[in-house]
Image 1 (cartoon, rainbow, N blue to C red):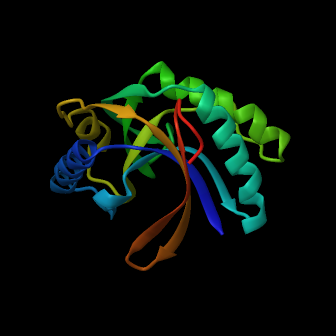
Image 2: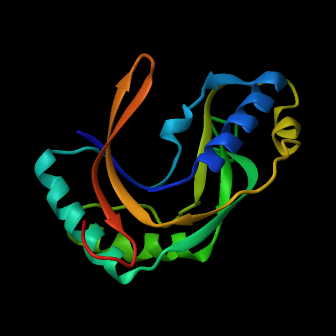
Image 3: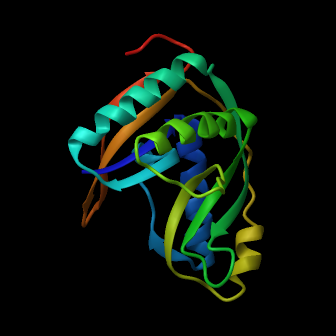
Length: 183
């Protein structure tokens, strides 16, 4: 099962993603563009794992979530991965210490149950996976302006992802309420 952990965003964030996608398309970028119902901020991508492994992940999520309060994020800026060469992913940055603290709180316990992740975490929301770029593409990305969106993160979710020719289909496996009781 292809699995990842993410925090939810809001419809307003999805609307902003759609706006930025349209600007990029009109500027000559092409690729695959996530549908608004799939917009999220990924914390950890586990890849293909056995269903039995999700139990340990869920236990970690619930334990950390009960000790971690809700937090606010604000979208800020547009950038891309990788930093060198042509972009493969364009994204909106997210500012706020809450998400960095949540990431750090989850990373150690996840390592103890067998998952290792790099040291760098860049909070972002994917706008698109890019297959082609126009001339002056760096300048065009830097010129994309939008009104930032402030939103509250109340849950951390474990999701499965099924890849289809029409895009990914996400299914929620488990939700942990931040600062609350186990669900």
